[in-house]
Length: 111
Image 1 (cartoon, rainbow, N blue to C red):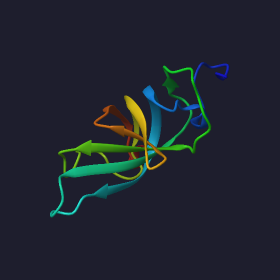
Image 2: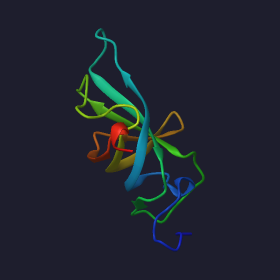
Image 3: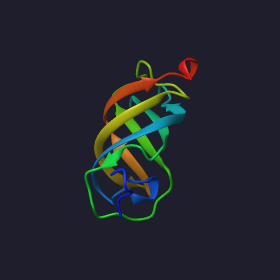
């Protein structure tokens, strides 16, 4: 069920597998100093990326991104548009990618 332009919409994310998508950061979460270092962001997908997996299931339009071992990731803040890729898995029912490769493609002041 790929759209004509070859990109999946958010509900077409695979249950597990490698994804390459585009989205906008809705919010970021920094772990407290007393816990293991991690930095997470919730990206709202815009449907212009693509998934390399054909087995799809209905999910929401957001993916949680977690950078393990990082208290902050330069350039990642609410409103930033980015392309990212990595292995998607479900953590507590939420589509999640750990330590993705990413490229910042727009910042809030550039809109």
